[in-house]
Image 1 (tube, chains in turn cyan, blue, yellow, orange):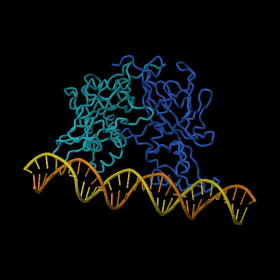
Image 2: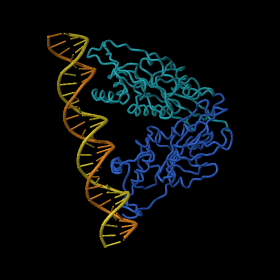
Image 3: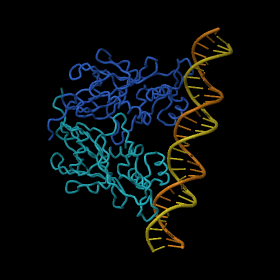
Image 4: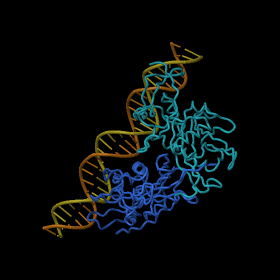
Length: 241
Length: 241
DNA sequence: GCAGCTTACAGTCATTGTGACCAGAACCCA
DNA sequence: TGGGTTCTGGTCACAATGACTGTAAGCTGC
């Protein structure tokens, strides 16, 4: 039987793509201002205590929704932080998740006095060890985008290869050759052409693609896909067959 | 402030290489018999409740040492399991680590009525959700051995390339071409020849190698290397310059 | 002490994946 | 109608890798 246990919290690092001051898509993360001690007024990850009767993922999805109003398209456990000194006063163990939301969804998000978006690689000093946590989540995102299909989680139902490339470029912070990018994505089999094209651009209209939904976004092996349902995705209509 | 919290446990999946009935090296894991309810008499992962004043890794290292007598060369957090129904009666959240131990160390391990080694891919029905946990750890080991240097954690200070290849073959469950394996390992720069060879074999004596200890076994990104000191490694002496 | 066996190690060849680059296609706009 | 830009398909060179061949170096049996 356990003694007086450590307090169990669930937090989530949220990423979305938003244009920076130069108009280029970059990674942003929403943070919430702490409204009570300890660390009052510092910015922190959305989260909360784990209720006895709630699943870990559900608690992550719920708390991030309650504070930011966002519904993520991807949600995965990141790491559990439990160092002795990470919270002043009492022992807190935080199971941290990370989430990706679509840009359209990010625009709808509640922002205000106590919720604000920050550029993910230029954060202020956050509460507790949250800077370290965001850095780790960022590292995981950047390594994982190269060997999995999570980039799709930033996009809507259909998308152009230029949009998908823009996601990769924003995450990896380097430009990719359009022709080579097209070749690798098409040969990966993760993506299927819808047959439609996106008109309205001032140039040659690009084809619209859809990702093959029979494959999960990220292979978790024997654990299988995470069970919280993805947010509903608005449909974009193409122009011409 | 948290309500009556879930109980926090720490468990560890341990892997070592041991010969199977055909004499070939395969993956084994030590399990402990539960001596109290719930799930009394079922085999389970070594672990215990998290003390308020102990780090997560330390608790993992301590509990696995107390029950099995082993000192791992590699110890990393695997995943945190917290499903509502995973333990009958009360809500238990388990932070699970996985560990690799050397074969020599594994031989020294305490075995008895309540501790026994099992072939990792042919386990009996374990307590709680521990079968699923071992499966996931196995999957992580098998994917990680291909892009990191963790295979070295199964071996001693010096080793031949045939021994290192045997580790890879046992983990991946397929045979590897000796010449190609040599080429990739040598060009990776992870390993340096000691200049000594291992005599005593009935054939041409192989060179002994040592891994470049300036590189960590596995890249954890911003988190840096896990801080529990690796067990001391017995020295093997070569024969001829 | 030598033939023969087994493993260690070195090297070749073909295939594949990928970065760099080129060129035509398709649209909008002036 | 022509210029500009992006989309898209293609080539070329190089690196990584699997399959395979051949030689080196020890031991053992006769």
